[in-house]
Image (tube, rainbow, N blue to C red):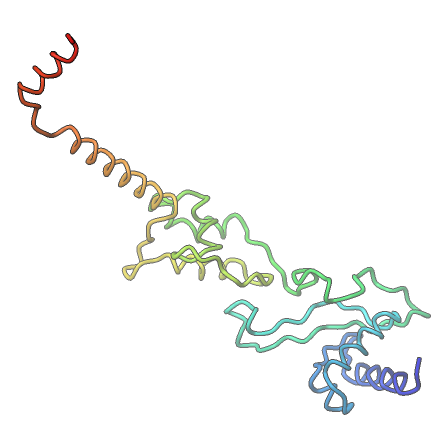
Length: 222
């Protein structure tokens, strides 16, 4: 390792140690780069080098407010969380070696699951309106316009998350809108009605004159 790179690696390691708490640290690239006098790209390379050497282990991947759930956007950007490791004295935790290749949902803190009771309570009004269980699942992942939600971050409060997404399917009076299956059924009925109307229109008309029947009979005898 070159002398300048070694100096930068040691400087990055010292900053990680200064900002650590209980063996974990959550530094930002911008502050680290400003303190070291280098670019943020250089800081990322130095962190990857420390991770490769076994002194860092990523326990939580960072996210930006743009790609976080709406209820957590007010918290701003979330920096990566590293765990300081000493390979000589303690075994390295079984985590992936790179945060870039790690599933963003892995290791997310305060992850919870939606209970059956919570799901029933939040979807009760929709089921009473004639929704099917698959309609509730569809509404949780799509807007009423049929556009999928772009936020796939781990959910920390599943019931509040489900309540907020299902609220998009409520009308001004608070009544549930037509579900996906109800809309499909209504569209199918409209298609059948239009086909029946056209079929009935083709049946209505004036009978051919007698001269047409006489001419057709003459052609057959010919």
